[in-house]
Image (cartoon, rainbow, N blue to C red; front, side, top):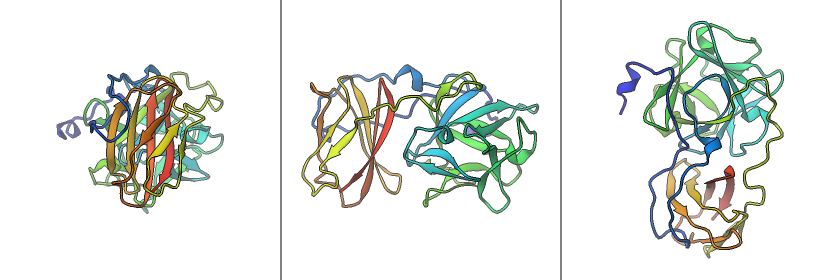
Length: 267
């Protein structure tokens, strides 16, 4: 699986992560599902992307100078311009004005550096290492700083760990680095779950439209509890059985023609 780490690719292919399906967990029929075109990443080239962690489903975001992750996918601080520098590595620049580019600090933090527009500095240079057709390590060129990682406290650092927390999916927002994308609509703006928190009874998930969707339920540690492609009934609703889930916090990830949305679910 990790042979590609010996010869990292600079042009790699990815699709939105769809984890293996488990039948019988959702009270909706199963149908073939194709990821929506606007979430498929072909070659990694210059452009604007969202960067989603495979383990947690959270999105890389710039908060002042500190880089962290969030369950909310919208906003310019969740969007990153990929700029190819002179050494054929990428600088990852926050689209939020003034935040700057992704920078791996010696103390283990990932921050935003105001250096612009591109830099060959190794702590600001990143390479995408393909694990398979839809997952990447994001590798820092600086010696000893290794793979971009979503830590358990939702901060972002780097490590030699090759778990799902150091694997990422890339969602292309725009191939044009000069276009503002902050006003793009939320994929499923009416997404709701009721009751939420749940007492263990079935949860009614609504706001899904009338097209097929892929649904992943991930617990607070980043483990996928179950995943299934679903054909929705009229009205864009389905019943989700949560009786067998331990009490805790979960994240419901919905992928469909409209894009990707995330909803926190309390059991």
